[in-house]
Length: 133
Ligand SMILES: [Zn+2]
Image (cartoon, rainbow, N blue to C red; front, top):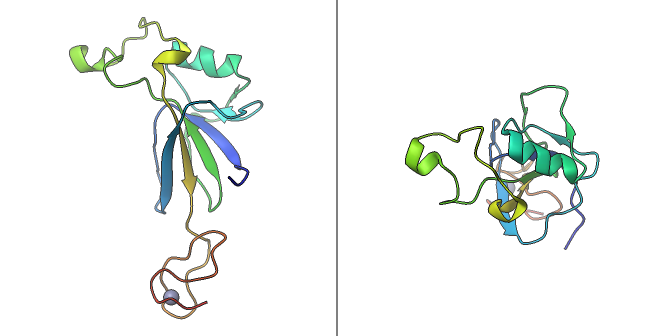
């Protein structure tokens, strides 16, 4: 596995900008020491800060650039009070086992294919649209 360039810790897999995102769940949270987080939920925030993430200067996550990854720590389905109450209450206690850890990586390259204008993938020489290399 290639080393991840983790630039953000998020409470969910949000993608405010267009791009191809590769998202997968991991069982062990990667090192997020010093990584800015954009989490408002108090318990989740406490957990990620215990893991070394730091409060981002802005509450607004502006998205991933090609090759960048975010660690997303949503509360696992069924463990959130959202299902029954329609929202997550700030009083809901969360421990690490309640969170799933998902890695979201932006895999489309900055520049489109020079032949067909299609999306290129980071680190790949072939165009997935036209096959040019
Ligand atoms: Zn192409």
